[in-house]
Every structure is written in structure tokens, then in C-alpha cells.
Amino acid sequence: MSRMLLGPFNRVEGDLEIELERSATQVTQAWVRVPMYRGFEQMLVGKTPEDALVITPRICGICSVAQSVAATYALADLAETTPPANAQYALNILLACENLADLLTHFYVFFMPDFARPVYASQPWYQVIAERFTAMKGSATQQVLPARAAFMQIMGIIGGHWPHTLSLQVGGLSKALSPRELIQLMGLVQQFRLFLETVVFGDTLETIASLDSLTALETWWDKQQAKPSDFALWLTVAKGLDLAQLGRATDRFLSYGAYRQPDNQAFFWQQGVWQAQQVQAVPFAAITEDLQAAWLRGNPLPLHPNQGVTLPYYPKPQAYSWSKAPRLAGAVIETGALARQLVNGHPLIQALVQQSGGNVQNRMIARLLELALIVPQMEHWLKQIRPQAAFYWAVKLPSDGNGVGLLEAARGSLGHWLSVRNKHILNYQIIAPTTWNFSPRDQQGQAGALEQALVNAPIQTGETDPISVQHIVRSFDPCMVCTAH
Image 1 (cartoon, helix red, strand yellow):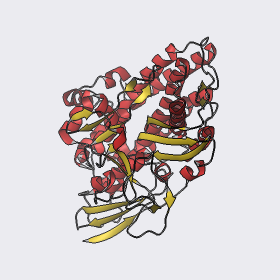
Image 2 (spheres, helix red, strand yellow):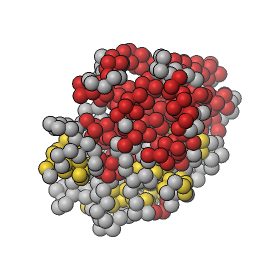
Image 3 (cartoon, one colour):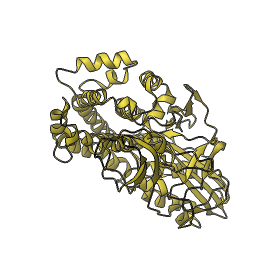
Image 4 (cartoon, helix red, strand yellow):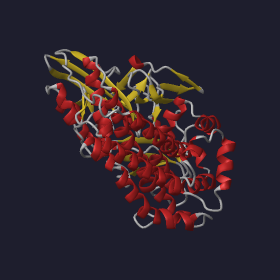
């Protein structure tokens, strides 16, 4: 056995280091290290609750709307209020725009360029993939970046700017949408639909969304062989390298539910926990954070975020990361697009996981599927907005109380827990998606989801930066700046 240290990783948001114990042919153990601390939770203590709407979006430049929405929901929970229907529809469109832009960017810019590396030069699909997906030079870049930029104009119309929009408030949206702006927004969504249908899928979004079994996926892929779309090319690579056997973690999945409906009770995608092939209710009171391997001081027992604190303690014996270790009823959990579609009951995703569990192939299929599922829903939400009705109503926050804001960002389940005393923030704790997926070991010695997924990853002769490890890490789409926030 020997050890190797990988990092920092390129094409990953933020700093990441991974220590591997390896045999001659595979990884035997892994330790995931977040080497950067930022301190947003400490900055918020003593501020007024409304300051969270300004400060928390700065946690990340990629999912700043998701952080804004989580803070907005936490304050709305504190005030026991819900926004007008128009504001909820607009919020969903804004969040969907950011999430889809992230899913698209991850596929084309972060993930697929790995398959254009010379290590795959002997594969029958290599030349096509290299011409299409080589970083910065592939033909896909010239199509994807303009399409993404056009789609992001939605952020400007609804949010004023991106990242760090200030348009989301506790009482709704600070800016109403005019009939002309609604027409503009519909045009942008349909322009993005055209890009997805002609470039990404080579088929209608409704056809992709309706793929409901392994046989249906295989049949669709066969029909694409004459002129394969980028999704079909990805399936060819995944099948050729047997990526369904790479990167399996816990097979326990969490989703807080995505895209609230105006009654604030229902979700477009349901919340739940998937384990043992079943969906169960989320035991929210059983969410804890373990500090055993984190460079943080605090109670020796894992605590719920309502009681937790974030106090740096470096160096700390036996610790190796700035990330806490979130656990659900003591269990390690994976979150992300695969979790969302499992919990919401998409038949193709359930069939894939029943066949091979959570892995590199299935995580990527779930991400691309969400592109096809959400764009038609954005069109529906736009049609529900009534320009003559309210987008905002005044809300008075109480002097004391607690609030929680839960949602699904592109990378998975995001939660903000807020306590207010005498009109000021007493405590503010955040658990981001990558904190769940990239957590270190806990008091029970349980490795985090990625740490488990890396075990048994193959290592080729002479590799100092194993390509299999790169695929597994990026299949989670990590955001390290959100992790230790």
C-alpha cells in the first residue's frame, strides 16, 4: 500500500484535496479535504435578519440565487408568511435558470473534457469526442457559451443582475414584471428549448422526459446512431467505459423538494429520502453536523443546525478538513440531481439505480434529464403570472424566533437555519450540497459519500493523477466554496 495526494483539482469550483491510499491497481481508502475556510456564518451573527439577503448570496458566484432563496425562505419561515403567487412563480423561474445553467456548464465545461484526454486515444469514439469536447477548443464550446449567455438574460430581467441579485425579498419580488417582459422571458426560454432540442438531445424535450425504462433509453440511443446528439455521445462513452460500475457511494439519497408552488405546501419535485429502494419522509429533526474531523471547535456530540456553531480551531488533532460532516439519523447521504429524480419517482432514474445504484453514469443522466424536465415547466410558470396582480407585500419580522429555508440547488439539498433574538441574528448555520457529498469522517468512523465512492476506483499503471478519480469527483459537481462557506 502507498499514499498519494491529489489537488488542487482544475475544473472544480474552489479548492479541493484528496488523499488516497492505494494498492497497485485501485484505491483502497480516501480522505476528502476542504482546505479553505471563509466564515460567512460568523459574519452573520449580530447582523439584522434582513442582512442575510445581502450577505449569503456572496457565498457563491455560481449558485448565488439558490443562497438568496434559502435565506428568503428562512426569513419567511421566521415571519410565518408566504409571498404572492406571482413572486413564487418568478422565484421558481429565476432559480430554474441558475440551476439549468449550472447543469449545462457542468456537462460541457467541467465533465466531458476529461474524455478528450490522450489516455482514451485508443477508444473508437475518441476522435469524435476530442473534436467536440476538448477544453476551450472543442466545437461544442462555440455553441454552448452563446446559448448559455442568452439564457442568462432571464436573470437580468427578473433579478436585475447575476450573481448576487437583491430582487428576492421576504415579501416577494422587489420588481414587478410587465406584459412586455413576460413576452421577452418566454422568448428566451423557447430559444433555450431550441438549443437543447437541436444540440444537446437531438429530439424534443418531451421525448427525453418520457424515457421511462432501460429499454426505452436503449431504443432511443440506437435511433441516434446515424447523427448522434451530445446526450447520445455521452451514452456511447458511458457504455464503452462501463461508467455504471464507477463511483458507487451509499445509495441513500436526500431531496428537500424543489420549486414550491404558490400554496407553499406542494413542490414540483417532491421531498424525501430514498433508501432500500423506497421513498421515506425526511426526518428533519434528525439532521446533525459532526465536528470530529473538522478544524472546528464545539460540542463533542453531533448537533442539529439549530444548536450548532462554527468556531475555527486549527490545527486540531485528528482533523483534516474545514468541512463538517452532516448526517441524517446518523447515516451518510448523497444529494443532487440523481437524488431529486429518485425521490420524485422518475421511472428511468429509478430503473437505473435499481440496476446499478448511484454512480458516474447515473448521476450524469439525471442531470441531463432535468434540462428536459424543467424548461417546459418554466414555460408553464410564465403563463401563470398575472402582471396586474401583486408581486410583493410588506412583511414585519418578529423580534425573536427561528426560521429554516430548505430547497434544491443544482448540486443538491441546501439548508439555512436562522435564530433571531432582540431583532438581531443570534445564530446562522448552513449545510450546502457539497457539504453532504464531500464530508469527512464522523465520530463513528463513517467515511463521507465521496470518500466511499472513491474506494475501488481503478488505477492504471504509471498513473499519478488517476483518471477514474477525476471522473468520480466531477460526477458530483462539487462546489468547495459553498462547502465550508
